[in-house]
Image: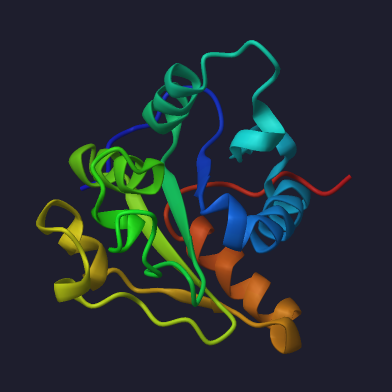
Length: 165
């Protein structure tokens, strides 16, 4: 059962900046139109110079009720340690997913283009439950239909759309 979120952004976008920054930005813009900018957290759109990003990210996770994990084809690609970055305990995506699982925040994997949900065996044991979350796909050819499905999935988890102007 999901916990009740505090005031602040209800939707948290977790992504790898180097490989999924662009799709995460598009998702942020799309969801900001649907739910309002103050309801969607993406680090580069929320944090300002001088902010303590580790505290701000932790606080945003405390307030959100839905986390989107943006997964592209490179999400499991080996990093500097010759294994996928998600296996590194200091990896920010790993930390974010673990926090969401621990706090029972709804996780919606968002698969970009032809990406696949990671298999349990491909994930560290502490975040393997993410492999069993129903995903939403976003493909550039079906972006209107796919974004509508994403919005519906978020609404289905208790986040209200902003009223039309």
